[in-house]
Image 1 (tube, rainbow, N blue to C red):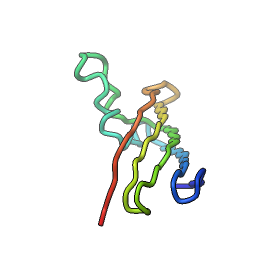
Image 2 (image 1 turned 135 degrees about the vertical axis):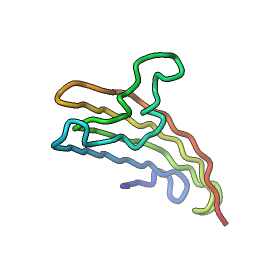
Image 3 (image 1 turned 90 degrees about the vertical axis):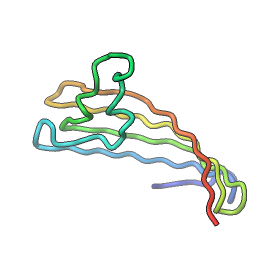
Length: 103
């Protein structure tokens, strides 16, 4: 995943773009289990189990390093668009936040 340090060894910006296409109408399954279940708890239509034939995904995030490279706070936003036979199945934005450390 490409990245760029905004502040050396402290604040890092990251970006990812992903495109997938399948020859079958249900040939791609979105990897996010949360998106696949969107709508279930509110009795809204679901996302067809996250299957389609064309998927675009873009992620933009920041990593803030607290103690070297072994402790960081990560935040990010991801945009997903899934279609099947030219019909939009899902389009949405997910926000992510995490604290990561290891020894």
